[in-house]
Length: 149
Image 1 (tube, one colour):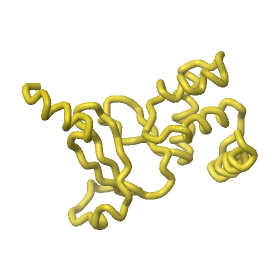
Image 2 (cartoon, one colour):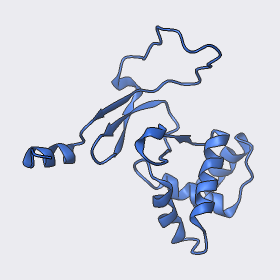
Image 3 (tube, one colour):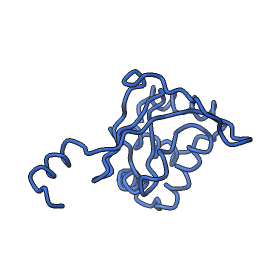
């Protein structure tokens, strides 16, 4: 981990009340090297190159610690498996219904979402996000080549 990235990670851990460990630093660095929304298994494969003895359970536990502390966010749970959102700025998502790829949409791509109805009694809204569901470019091309699917 580069010196500035390591210092940034230490600052984030301090802000979120987490101890800095070598394993957490490697897992965080691996997460940040992804361009998309990785699964724990994808993170595990990347981390294993740096820490061969690490277990998938340790990666899961660390990811859940990052999520519970607010350091990272979990994507909506209905995508089939845990997916990590490393974006620290407010944004929305486009989800491919076929391959389950997830793409970031800048908050400015949509008009601001506005809650106009009542929420269940006692429910406290912490943040709002919008998901667009459809076919990514590759799946749309594949579907047009093979229309009977």
